[in-house]
Image: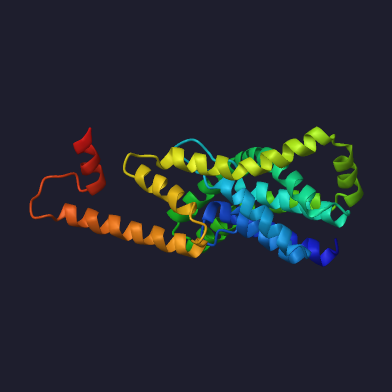
Length: 270
């Protein structure tokens, strides 16, 4: 990779690290980060495919209470860089993407360790900001806030820069050393990523009110004439109908009910 390409990749990694905390522009999401790295490295198609596949898995990653989700930013950036290195080394696109998917989950777990380090460093920064607030020093508050956010970006940028200097021959050598059963296993595992991601989302959202929509979606998806746009329009329409019924139930002239029309209907059958 050229120096300019490495600089662009590190910049994307820096943005992804910051967005892991800010959540403003979603640069840390796999679809965005992998696509951008694929764009700046000249492998846009492979980046989109990798990002789209990993995004299905990351759909179920969320911070719930004290539980911290795997680090999507490091998983996206590092796996995309390894994919690019493999492609530069002459690997075919399918093998490179499968390998990147296989290492994404371990990298996301490793990212939690980096997050812990950065947040530990941020503790004295908070105390410094408390002192600045007591002095009404708003400039210091802004500066230290920016520093704290930049630390999150650096935590992804440094590993990204280190990965960029791995020789493509080393990556290709590691790929060639892997037995056939491992390559096939990674391919099968990559195909299961989307199902696992959706299963995690369903596990978080599953209620008796949404199961009818879930079953209806499977039936509609089986109609080959319906495009993704058509399915999206149907989904939006069903959501609007549901919200309209819910609002009607909540303001229904003193009618008894929970305010959830489908829930009330299902309760009647229980």
